Every structure is written in structure tokens, then in C-alpha cells.
Image (tube, rainbow, N blue to C red):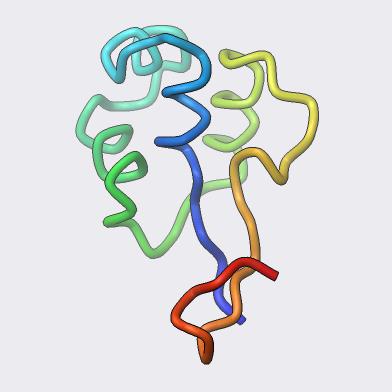
Amino acid sequence: MIAKIKVGEALKRSGKTQGELAELTGIRPNTISELVRGHRERIQLDHLSRIAAALNIKDIRELIDLVDEENGGADK
């Protein structure tokens, strides 16, 4: 199992831009971009909390999920 960051999907649903999310959260725009593109292997819990608050997310599964690595990343 691997953790999949779903910030890009949540951002699309919100209708906000990466720049707006960076402004709302105080997270560097480059970091937001890396999270959206899935190019970060680590994420700070504080960042997840700030993103959830900015996007009005109540369920952490909207931002992060576990996927089965053996089945090509198919959601479990």
C-alpha cells in the first residue's frame, strides 16, 4: 500500500486556483504545485490541516488515500 496525495482533485472540486490555495494557506506556491502534481513524497501534517481548512474539507480521505501498489495504484 502507498499513500496517494489527492490535493489536485480536491482543488479542482473547490474551483480555487493553486495561487489562491497558496495565499489562503500560507504554503509556498512551489509546494502547492508539487502536491497537486503528486511530485512530493512527504507532506507535513500542518500543510494537510491548512489545505483542509482552506478548502472546507472535513474528511481527510478527500486529501489522502491508500492505494494498492500491486494493482497499478488502483484505489482500495
